[in-house]
Image (cartoon, rainbow over all chains, first blue to last red; front, side, top):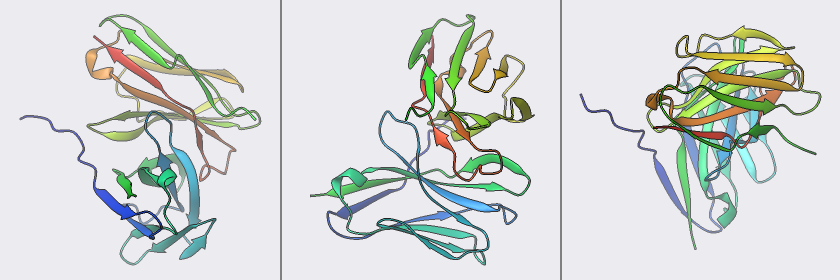
Length: 112
Length: 114
């Protein structure tokens, strides 16, 4: 059959509003979860991580929420700025292995 | 402070040729990871090293791919012979052993095999 590429979900947000990006993870044995930001032509950039024994962690303008019951992770970005435009990936790891398993990514677009 | 350094940034080669990608991790980091990114499959782990020792190479696609880490500051990923389906962006990342939740990525090498 014909192969198709990944169709990234897109989130369009007004500048200054808050953004919420969601991710479903697969491995209930993962020890940690990470959010990365990838701008066009660059490598993924570490944003924030959260351990499996936590349900919330805050950074500068970002908050990550972890719901282990439904295996769901979210990244909240406060007061979104034009520089926040990028593809955001969640990743999971641990459980005896150091390599990360990445999600498909969400393309965040900031409207002026 | 220099981050992860990869070379070359772009590589165009013909099918059947050998390709070598290079990575210098962040100084002091002792875990090194190779990932591949394609539109079809997203970001995938190929192999990783702890203290220069390969730990998990289950993500390496086939025997045409090999990776080495001769010392703490240098790693190579080699494809021989290359095929068009190997076209992708290859990323190297590094971290401290035991702190793989904070991996730092290089800028990537965009490989095109014609």
